[in-house]
Each structure stands twice: as structure tokens, then as C-alpha cells.
Image (cartoon, rainbow, N blue to C red):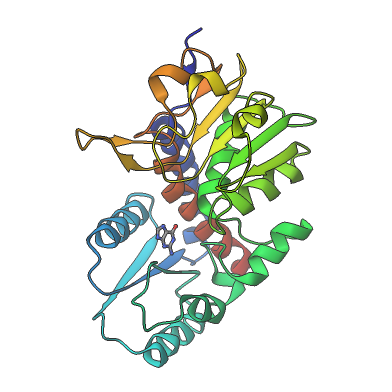
Length: 283
Ligand code: GUN
């Protein structure tokens, strides 16, 4: 079997067109959806990420501001900036790029963001809303994974989903979203014993560890759907995921490539959340 690709670029394009259309409708009412992206320090990867986020906003007709600060910025000054953005009516979403310099308590900064503007979905109120099925913002990467499953018409009800990884940003919220869609969910992690026995039973596998070849063909049930959240480099320096793509694509029914899979969906869902925040604020 050769799996069908779930193309994150194509799906992103479609969803971003919808965002642009909804943004136009809000603009007609005098509201331009606005995202503030805050970067502290000069982490090269973060600089690329924030540039891509701001560009994606521009391309979809969203207003965006990029605030860049020196790595020496104090925690108090950053908290004051977040508070100012909380009170800025032109800003509907606030994203503080992580990681922050070591002298700043990242969790404290995240908790300072108004939950109504927490388009990253990292605030404890957003996590609680996801856990209880209340309205809130879902973290962008796992939310993108759900959209990818929807795009292939996949019905999660009663299916066994195995999530590999338990981070607050991907693994844990992914498990809660799958549970909300009525899947039976197993969360595996670095201490899990006999991972292969679990993944072999899975109808859906989400690999979100940050390590190459966590999932190989012998671990996958024929016909399973495989989503690869990993972003690693192989020995030749090429971008690759957590999944042994060449092997697993011969067993799975659907698989996301790296690059061009989950990656573009993360920024797309940030746009969706920002638009949603602006729509909610306009009501
Ligand atoms: N750093 C890496 N990914 C992310 C993300 O999705 N949001 C934020 N705020 N920081 C990140």
C-alpha cells in the first residue's frame, strides 16, 4: 500500500482563503482583526517563525504588529507590554514567542495574556476550557491535526488514537481534542513500555516527540492514519519528522509529509484563532 498524502500546504491555502473572506466581512463592519507578536531576544529559529507569522497575517488581510525586544528586557517590562496589548482594542490576539530568555518566567507571561486574546491557547484558562469542552482557543498545532483529519473525512468516533508525546503544547491538548471527538485515546511518552504493542493497535497515530524514526513501519497497523508533528534534521541536514516516512507510507492509509504537512497548519490555525478572537470581540 502507498499512503495518500495529507497535504498541509493545500489545506492551509484553502483555510487561509476562508480566513481572508471572513476578515473582509469583519472589515466591512469596521473591525480589522489584529495579531500582536512579541519576540524577546535573538533566537534565530524564533526570528524565522515570527516573520512567517506576520507575513501570513498580511497575506490574509489581518493586521499584525511585531514587537521585538532585547534579550535583556526585564520580566516586569514584558508583563507591562502584555497588559498594554490586553487593553489595545486594535489587537485581538497576542502571541509571545517561546522560548523566552531564562530570567523571564514564561508561564507567568502566558498567564498575563487575557484569555480572550490567547490565540496560542497556552493560558491555563484555555487549557481548562479545552478539558471541559467549553469555548476557548485550542493550541494551533494539535488543532491543525484535527483539521487534517477532518479534511479526509475521518470519523474519530470509537477509533483508537495513540499520541506519542505529552507536551503541554502538542501531546496533552492533542489527546483532549481526540477525546472530545469520541476517540479512545492512549498517550505514550518517554517512559512508556512496549510502544510498538500500543501503536500496532492504533487507527490513528500522532507522533509529537521531536526525535527521528520514533515510528517505523513495523509499528503501524495496515490502513492506519499517521500524523507527523516532528521537525528534525536528518544526517544530510534535511528537514524530517518523527516518522520513518519512506517505510510507514507503505503501510498507512494516510500520512502527513515533513515538510509540507502539519507545519504550515500551525500558522494557519493561528490565523483562524485570531479571526475567531476578533469575531467574538465584535459580538
Ligand atoms: N515557539 C515554538 N512554537 C511556538 C508557538 O506555537 N507559539 C509560541 N508562542 N511560541 C512558539
